[in-house]
Structures are given as structure tokens and as C-alpha cells.
Image (cartoon, rainbow, N blue to C red):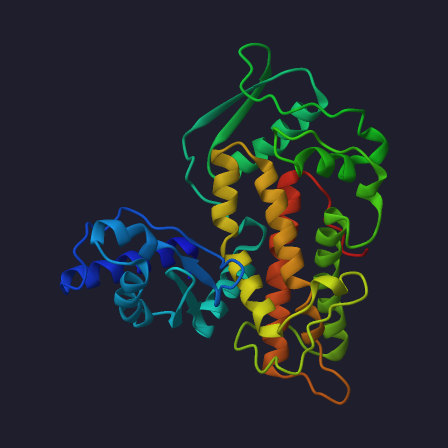
Amino acid sequence: MTPVELSRTVLHAVRCAVDAGELRVTVPARVVVAPPGPGGWGDYATNVALQLARPAGQPALRVAEVIRPYLAAASGVTGVEITGPGFLNIRLTASAAEGLVRRILGEGLAYGHGDGLAGQVVSLRIPYDVRAEVVADALVRIVSSQGGRAEVAHGDPVTLRPVPAPEDPAPLGPDAARWALLHPAPHDRPRISADHLVQRESNPLFRVRYAHARTRALGRNAADLGFTSEPGPLGDLDHIDGRADDHIDDRADGRADDHVDRLLASLADHPRVLAAAATHRAPDRLARHLVTVADAVLPVLPAVLPRGEEKPSAAHRARLALAEAAGTVLAGGLSLLGIDAPEHL
């Protein structure tokens, strides 16, 4: 279930509560669902109860309690919890996760591409500046991924003017230079330093490319062990300690199930992020999203291959499929940014 589909499910739950006379509000045109924040639970959370509390004349917690059973009964939802002042936290069924992985693997690098800008021509008039050129180049591909066409030209009136780089990024090499110019928001001054080249967890570009390379290496390792990927139930992850390796061990604390939840949420959010990056002319949104995906998948990877005397099982094949789906999203996103996604690192 994608965030858009889940948003419709939440709206349907609100409509059911209104039709039953338990809420007296106008059903909103849209609601926002997003990965849960600190203290949250499950795959997604929504603030719809806080949004409706005032018009309903009831506390947000009470509104959440009214909506909760209707949402919990929806197809594809396996649990709903209320946290904080009235956030509805939603966990999706395993079949929904399996469907997401199948969709990503089926669509490949085109996962997240849409037609939201179909027929639209986006005019990008930029100054003669290296960062503006790089941002515009990335936007040509990102806009195209949403069905539109971006035309780049120089001269007034300028419509795209990111803060220029303080120095020439070329010495960083093509990939690190592009990342240095694309990862910060357009209104932020990019940092041009050798930090973009170091191979450790403090470097976001390294984490993204390393995570992609690890997912591809697991596919090769699995082939050596005689099995391939197949989406399905992930099995019991309680015995996995959640530590990926020494490169990112300070990011791997927590239950493996929590890491899987965050990974699935970030993968499902990819189409929305691409659409927003195209609509708002903001490739930095895609770059930051790739960091989120990388940080979510790395702690999951130790659970993919059998350990010790274990034999490859359906759960291992499903975990490999999940890892491959994450690698596909990382490769597709890097490609749109014009950055290489290495198979080996």
C-alpha cells in the first residue's frame, strides 16, 4: 500500500465515523500520512485526529479513538495505535509489504515514476553558474520521471538561482561534486570539501553508495549459496542484533523489526518524494531521501544470508528481495541525480 492509497484509507475511515454519527465534521479533502516520528510506532502515522479536533469540538485523543476501529478494520492494515496528543500510528500487513517489494522489483529503476506533470513544459532559466547548471541537469531527469519536460536556458528572468558554490567543486570528481551541489537545499550554501570523498559513515554519499553496493553483493553471495530472491514473509527477525558492520554501527541500534518498518516506509514514500522533487524543483529532497533509505536498509542486511549451519529458507529469499528492492530505489535515485551507483565499493 502506497502513502497515497493509505491516505485514501484514512479518509474512508473518517467518512465511516461521520456516517455512523460518531463524528460531526466535514470530511477533509486530503490527509497526510508519513513515517512515524520519535516515539511513533508502525509503518506510518497521520495527524488527522488533531486536524479534526477543533471542528469536531472534541479532544484530539477522543477523535483518534473514534477513528481507530474503522481504520484498524481496513484491508491491508494490521494494527493501529494512538501516540502523543492523538497521532494515529498504522502498521500494514505483511502482504502489503510483499506487494510493495514485488512492485519495486517489477518496475525496476522506473519505480516512483509517474504522470503528475504529463504534458507540462517546465521552463528553467538559470544564471551562468556551475551549481545552477548541475541542479538544472538533475531536474531535467526528475521532471521527465513525472511525465513532464524541462527546458533549460540562460538569461533573464532567472527562475532557478541556487546559492553558488564557494569554490570550484571539480577537484572532488564528478560524483562527489554533483552530490556536494545537489544534497543541500537550493537556498543553502554548499560545502565543498574532501569530506565528500571519505569512506565512513559521516559521509552521506558514501552511505548511499555503500548501501547500494552491499545490496548487490548480497545477490552475488546468495547466488553462490544457491538461492535467489522471492518476495514473501520475512520470518522471525528477533535473533538479529541489528548491527550492520563497523562502518555504520552507531546507526544500527534497535530491534530488527523496527529497522524493517522504517525501510518499508521509506521505500513506499519514494514515489511521493520524486513527485515533490519535480513539483518544487528540489533535487535535494531526492538526495536526502536516498540517505534515509540507505540508513534504513544497512541494519537489515545482516539478516539476509543464512548464518552458520542455517539453510536458505523462504524467509531468506524474502529478505533478499527486500534488500534488492532497496538497492533498486537507491540506484534509480542516484541515476536521476546523475551519480554513479557502483556494484562494488
